[in-house]
Length: 86
Image 1 (cartoon, rainbow, N blue to C red):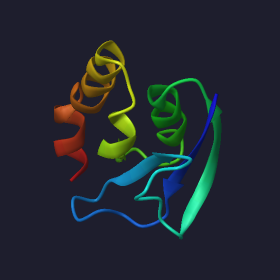
Image 2: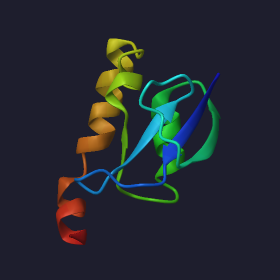
Image 3: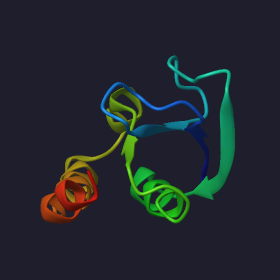
Image 4: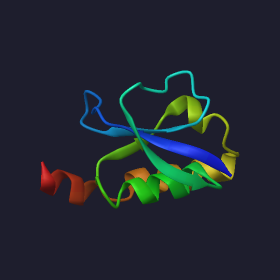
């Protein structure tokens, strides 16, 4: 299991990034999410508090191709809901 954190500041697109412990882009202003087996689980947990969440691309590099595909589907399956909120 890995410790995951969410950035308290939004990115230019409005998303807040989820980072795994040890990430070189780990922000100083962050909130602890918990321990998870995958980045996908951490993103799902983060979405309970904030809908517009994305995984750090560097943290995603550590994922297997199947995990990356599942996470990509999770991030992009709901475009109609996102556009309705904006």
